[in-house]
Length: 300
Ligand code: G1P
Image (cartoon, rainbow, N blue to C red; front, side):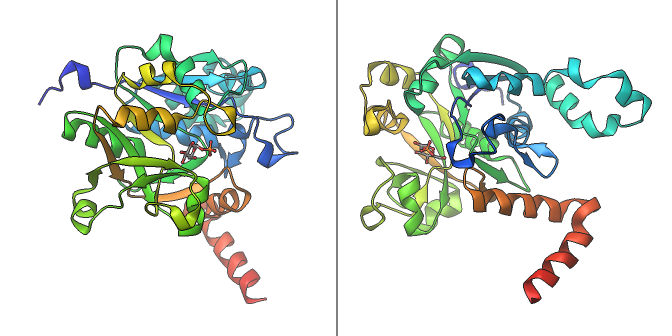
């Protein structure tokens, strides 16, 4: 069935302006988005997720030290003659594939004024149409449809409103995330999505309305930009995306999509190491040796 044109989503906004202070000194001269998870940078995994969902335009909201992220996807650097001579093309095939599937547009966020402000910077490119957002801290490893694809499916099924991806976390971890109110019923989980009443940004775990957190996957109706435009500073004096989502939620539905897949918080050191181990255990070239080494380490 053809989609109503007003529900067709082709663009994804990916904010990459953040300084990556949690990974200093590694991020002193290299954007955190280019740190590798096995052989591919974090941003490669994120854009792969978008491409798997059929999204066509990636809007990077960048800051000054982040121009190299665009270079990473520039085929000009990748088709170099020496690679061809030494038969190493295979190594870069996947980047060339991604570059051929998407257009990358970038816009600057001159000052770190919060996630809401970063999304609002994309307004000239996404205005008047629904759009997806992926935050790069969490990598979602999915055997079925990619995480943002799952959200887009709910966006089409529901026919009205915006969608957020949701994952269940330990109660203690709710302090790190936007948290959903209410928790889903068993029926909701079976259906895969449910209607929300509210969001709470980084609650005290004892007061969190549920253990369902936002890992940074959203599909918004265009009205979110109006709310962001009118938003004043929230927590930490920054324009918070969650505040504008709360406002929009008062007049348009919001749905949570229970994401199927394994989540790695690569913005956190332990999560980053776990992601590397998980992906390396899946690669043919590293699987056996790594398993043997890990079991020896654990037996010590
Ligand atoms: C942001 C959002 C939060 C979300 C999180 C996911 O927080 O404000 O709602 O759960 O990203 O990574 P940040 O991690 O930027 O502080």
